[in-house]
Length: 117
Image (cartoon, rainbow, N blue to C red; front, side, top):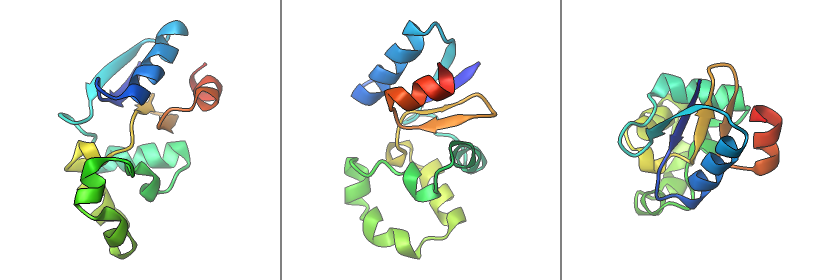
C-alpha cells in the first residue's frame, strides 16, 4: 500500500488525494507535520523519485523563509539536509508518495498518472 505523507490543509495534497481516490488506489495518509519521514526514508524517497535532496524542501513555505534555508542550503551537507527535514515536516515539499519501490515528490497530474496510474 502507498504511504502518502501530506497535510490535510494543503491544496496540493488534496488534489493528489483526489487523483488517487478517483483511480481507486489505496493509500495510508500520514500527516507530514506530525510524523515526518525519518532521514533514511527521506533519502530513499529522493533516490526513488530521482530528485536531489534540495528538491525535498517546500520552498514556498513560511518556515523555509523564516529559517532562511535558501541562504543556508549551499553550506549544508546531504546528512545535514536530511536531519533538518526529518526534524520539521513543514519544511518538506508535499505530498511525498511511496510504495517502497517508486516515489513522487509534490503533485503533478501527468507524473502521478505515469507512476501511480
